[in-house]
View 1 (cartoon, rainbow, N blue to C red):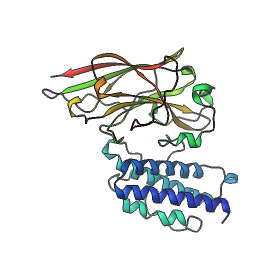
View 2: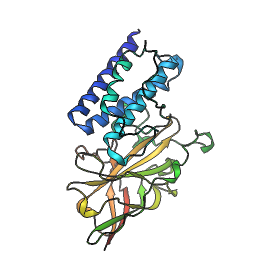
View 3: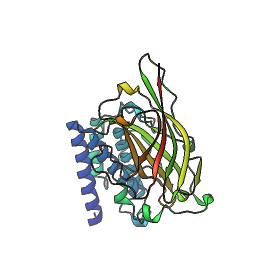
View 4: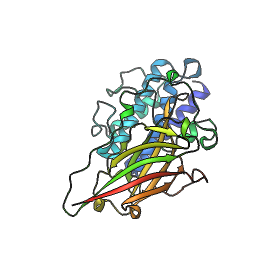
Length: 317
């Protein structure tokens, strides 16, 4: 075993144990972050060129399947709101199942048995885990350098259906209860015209960063103009306002595709707290990635007067 392979396996093993420890202790947010970061590292190695890898193609396939299992466990911890990307039931992928993979990862160089779970490697284009982008991106800072431009014909094929979004209809009304519709009008960005396939992921989180409603993606932006990306799309919040927990917030993550890196990256985010829910227009500030769902270490994206422009409508029986 080369020193490089030994070092990788030690780091991956430590990360795996850290994640399962968090999981067994009930520290779900930390477990999710650890699983997603490790999954991204395993995916990156699995997709590396033969002359740049310490592992054989068969070993890389096994690493990719372990990454899929980490994603499944991470999705299971986030509850039933996350969409499935695998035929395996999230409820069925338990911590005990995941722990069976630790010796496989540790002994990957000599492992030659059939993989214990019927899963497939995740697609090459993958959204990065929270906090992971800064470790893996070596481009210039996006606020200064931009996302880059090029001929759309040269870009890799998009995931089928990705441009349509995953928006949900309004919930049925209940007497005395309030529903919230948020129209995402536009977002102001210095390099708005250079963003490829931009869209916004909308989620409602509690103070610990756990989802309170299904996560929704907007369709790809309708147009780009000067320093604005226009959406003009309605988001129906999937919980009555009165039922949202104290301290909850609605998050808006602006994402765009990077053809050179072959993944979708979060460029910035914004959020709206409960005391800001009121009918009419509102503009909210943009913050630098990674998305901080706990709202503890916030850093403004820019000093320029660029914001996310929204319009709120309240529906009450």
